[in-house]
Length: 384
Image (cartoon, rainbow, N blue to C red; front, side):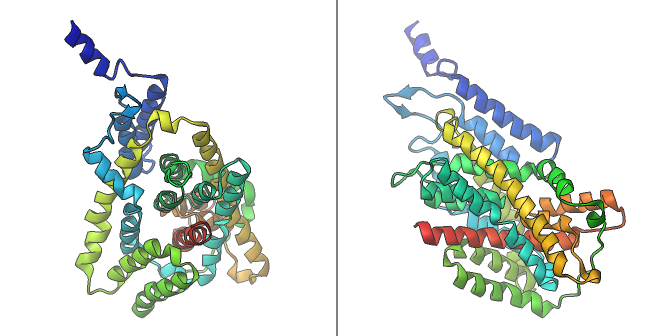
């Protein structure tokens, strides 16, 4: 009987709380969204399953959680890639090897739309300060406005990692960032319709010009030097992004590019998703601060989307009649690549089945990736 009692004491049933139940439902919901609706399944399914792993109740012994991240656990060592900011640059390497910057090179003015969308980052930063977070925590929360999961994890691992008097907000920030990335097809269309007229949504843009191979090779080198000098703190991310793109465009390193954009990024995505998910234990995730982060994240995403659309409308005031920008593509200024660009394409086709906006939307989309990383570097330079 004593053995049975001890067995039950160590089981998850004896240590189960309502908080664990809530988080298990959240994990199941993420998996459901990924499988049923195909919302970022490569991210939401690993994160959702990680949430399940992290919220199986363990015995609390003398204040020490004998859980999935206990000393000697393989999950503990894998999670070091999140805490030390190792995984996000590797993700950027793969993104660079997959990305074609041709439309951005062809129409450099569209980079301004990606920059305009970053207003969500800095307004969220101010909002977080107003809600009582310190400067470092507010900086980490603000980057959610860029809708860039790897950048959000990278910055929070530096600024809100539980050290030096800061809260450990890596889990809530990562979950918020990836949640809003996955919900791009739900969040953005109403904002796009609200801020644009029927006439604006029917604007047909000129086809982008053909970009030479030389331009494609020069771009990652020039981009690295320019962004590196502007924001040295962004180099861990943008250095890998542009390096991956150079591997793709040089034509002499196709094997390396293939490794970066397929096996490497797939492995890192699995490790990042499941370890971030497992870090969301109920006792540290279900807090007032986490709820505020989700509210701020939703607000910042709306502001970022609106910022890109409204700036496109401003640019049209000064553009010639035959060179107008369809304001819908401004919504792609958030760096949820390529989902926000796909949403622009879908919304454009609803208005005119012959008006394809995807190639135009990719320009602000990829510039949003660069912009959010630059913004993260600027925040690091001011706050560290």
